[in-house]
Length: 340
Image (tube, rainbow, N blue to C red; front, side, top):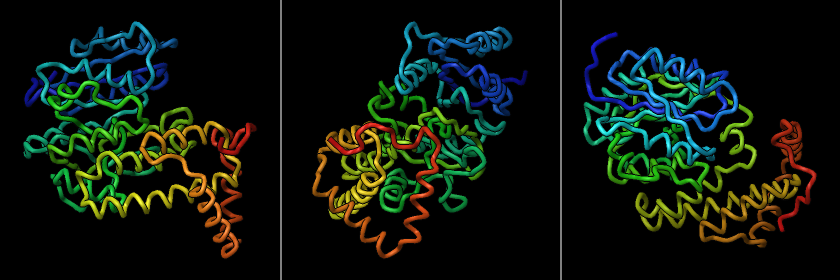
């Protein structure tokens, strides 16, 4: 084993029933070219062989330890439990999800950027998501970008460089000083926490593919796509965090524009016959944002879709055919499709 050097990195992996992929995840940590790390695997009451896989590796490497929850927890609360295992001596924290993995130079290159620029609180890089590279958009080299600038570009231009929790490195003191670290009521808590942290720190970026995110039908990503949670997530960011990143005029204009787009999407969903779960989710999110669910806005959105359909019948039919061809998980259910 190489002699550890450089600041300590605490790696954490929350796991629930990942027997099929966990070994690959752990091997990717063991293969790191950066060697000063400790590793905690948090088993969330798995009912398959995940715990046995973790124990096998822990028995072979003293840097690996296991924490097992006494009770089963939802995904994001379990991520918070994992982050509470971060070593008091660590300077950085890296989450590696149990069904994902990281490339061999991930820790080395992320730590190097953070060490070169002490104002950095979060480090990202390109992500291989299934077969596609994501988190692109920053000009090369841009190893450090002002936190406020990243937030502004996300809100105004749609620049998305955060990725999932698997894609970034956090400064450990930021993790320790925010408990719970993730908002357990937000499916996009990993994005929200970046906006919270970047008010007081900068964003580092490595222009290489450093992490791999697996695309799975029952993941949070799949749930997000089924419900199209990105609309509600952006609204929450605009209402809660945009006033810090944007001017008042920019904020008001952005919220107005986003709500028009949001209701246009909901109007289209009304004609598609989306299921009750879909409407319950979006009504609750609009209410929680302090905006409220407005039937008149829904009607205007549906009217705008109908006008567009009349002007572009070919495109509309092709879009409808694609929607109807979605996998079973994403199809509208048989329940009453009208918003209550």
